Length: 152
Image 1 (cartoon, helix red, strand yellow):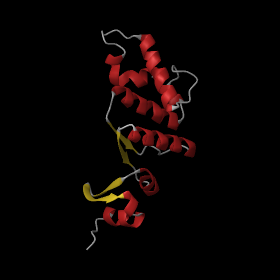
Image 2: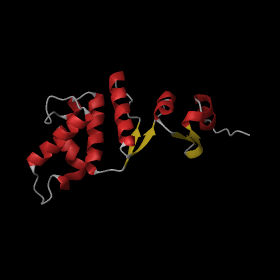
Image 3: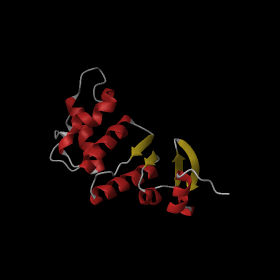
Image 4: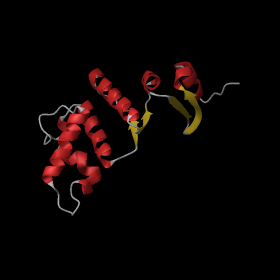
């Protein structure tokens, strides 16, 4: 699907309140998110799979922002994207948090967690084993709890 349809998909009523799609409104919404999120594309009619990984991620984020979501879950958001796109996603996550959107980052990359979070919930075999304040923890302590051990 094109960027415009993808962004409005989770909130179709926003662009089709009477049941008929207002194409101009869909285009306006898509253009706004392309601008706000820095999506690099030749057109809002571009098929999303033809975008880079980082820009595909931004389209998905735009979809849920247009829905009006108060909490966004980012599950491995930087896997498989280049360094520049990673920093763009990090900047966007920071901006969303400042704007009051709840941001939950799920990542297997410890440096990413340590650099992007306030608190880290550590899981072992599907159960939470610890909640750590990022500023006072390190990779060793996180791995300790992830392995199922507890401190005495």
